[in-house]
Image 1: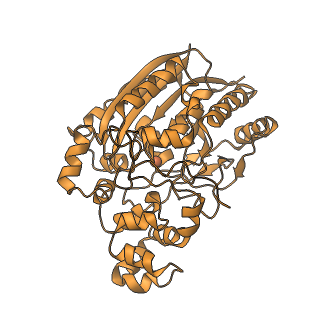
Image 2 (image 1 turned 45 degrees about the vertical axis):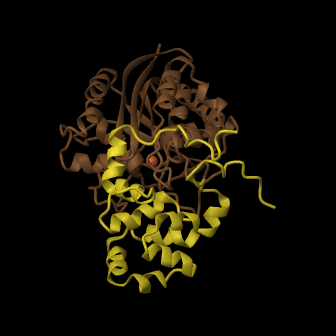
Image 3 (image 1 turned 90 degrees about the vertical axis):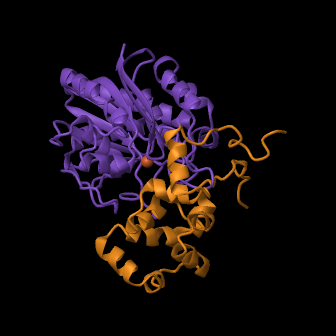
Length: 129
Length: 278
Ligand SMILES: [Fe+2]
């Protein structure tokens, strides 16, 4: 039996725990393969064929091809490793992070320059008890 | 006997490497961050360390999910950097100090810290960028000992455990019989979150309290669980555990030699501190 997870109530936040790590193992391993230039080139040339080399679920492959990072995280991806997909696409960490928030790139950059997302209303789901 | 002359704690965002490669130190976006470092370099020129013990978290370059130690330490004669896929240049190799590494290992294991020991190890941006900020010519004048803390895959070691590790590490270094000067570095944080709808999360109030506690109340962070630290500082802000280890190596009373705090670099609130034993 897995442990209680008292930490699933931070809004918009996934704790990368053992369950996620198991579910996402091959997804994350695929991501790490993109640290090698020749793998980046092979992935870019034919994403589907490259993904098929990894024992990932179909859902994980679809999420990668759609660059849906929130979905990737829900399926066990970890941003430290998913970031290699963004780097392959020539995207900055800020563009990647922004893409998960439903904001445009400019809106997200502005929010960061103005001090980032506040903890007010972002600490616990259903904050006011 | 060896002496810990102080600690340097700093953020380690990959984008810093991009900014260094492009020479953006005076660019208005980057200047408030890079301006924190000349006083650190002046301090280093004064204290002249022989060795840097650098506490950080690896992001998959050396430890992936196949093997994820809670605490690990390098015991190699040399540590190389490698391509992490960011497109930033790799840096020159670092000299290790296997004798000191093994002394620390003996000492920590005797104190019941069961570390993974690594006679081969590559070091990622969390190690190389803080070094490059301290020595921009990248001609490293020190030997190095990497200490790695898992801040990636929960369960993470508690802040309390990290602080105790730091205290034991401090005792280990102080019992090294050579007359050498040691700087302990801790890298990561401060508040940031790179993932999910809460990405972009920053908690200035918490960061400033944490930085103040580094000087005045070193065990302050140990009252929080790692999940509370994520709630308060973000999914990646929890890298501040590396600061907690570094702080543990110093005595209760310290003096602050330098501090800088700036929002944002990329997605991150950057923090920088230099502390000396009082
Ligand atoms: Fe990091």
